[in-house]
Length: 79
Image 1 (cartoon, helix red, strand yellow):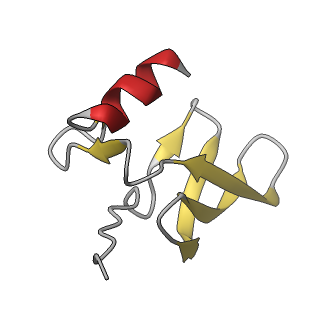
Image 2 (image 1 turned 180 degrees about the vertical axis):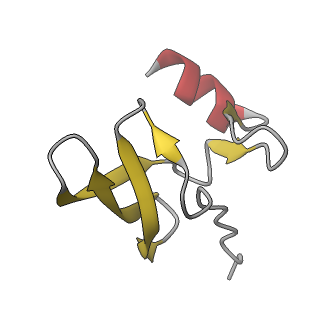
């Protein structure tokens, strides 16, 4: 069985100048679910990041998600 490597966004990362990542709720081979704070409205929200490990990977230096190698990258680009 292949090990799934998941690289979530760091705690306190801010998305769209609005959502502050507080922690990871769950992570697996298809994506990552975060608990976040919606800053303008001061409420908690759940954010699901779709990042199938067979098709994409996160650059740990920049935080950007890129297509993987091989057929998975082709499928991601077409989708």
